[in-house]
Length: 397
Image (cartoon, rainbow, N blue to C red; front, side, top):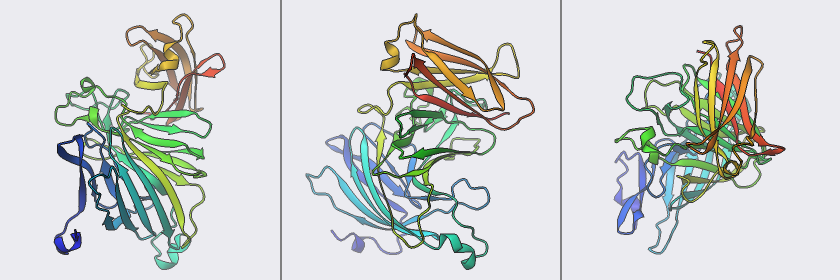
């Protein structure tokens, strides 16, 4: 089939969709959409569109220059045969600062899997001012970038006049570190932009997840937030040292994607030398895979009942390792925060209704410091860590 002859050059099409018998063998459903700049979205079985991935992000979240948006300019679509279970795509990516070639191998399923390989050539990134005095050297190169939306959720302290309890496409960033530690960072929609960096070495995985899967949590019959996919990134090969970036833009409604996550290499690629990256994206509801077992299931924050200037933080943990701990032998919450606040209370309770463990912390911000407070908490039983590490970035009002 000669697609080029069927599509006139002046059609003005913006992208393409992939159809597949995803949910029923007798019906072709939308499996994915590649639309706009280097954005694309995929679906697993029973899922609805939510967050997006991108081919590359350049200087996302930097406050001293505009973000650069690379574009997929050319595509080669490999026509699958009737018996094929995968589809292969090739693309050229172009931008002011770089050019690259991408290969996608997409396998639909309960969790849809996309194996991605790319080779990037960056132009004279350290001498851009010689070409354009207004341009600055690249600060961040976003590999495997994800873009999502978080308006409000359980942990939100900014309240909006809306009938729904929650509205978001993702509710947290999960990171799997080299030493096996799992970090869970709940998302938030603060009144100002927040940009956090997590130092990593040989990162084993990261992603924006939607953990709340109950319709009752959203009460939305038009946006099925309980069915949108989590997206998990697994590097192939050792990516070395770098940072996972989390960018949270302030938004007043759900129509804007205000969350960005990506990995940024510590050593930037040399100009005009090929730099290769390979990774796998999992578009999952975690029905057929578990990204983290003993995990944080909710975060709630409010005013302390006895001190109006303190915050009370409630974190719920559950999982197979936690489920076998006797009620009379509660785990210990190891919690700490940055120097601009003090944790004044630390309690652990068994919740007999949900059959999980609840940590209640009290935080007293130092009055003279208006910077965000970094907080961490994990559960231990003796010398054994039995939960993820909950990490939070609390902003003063």
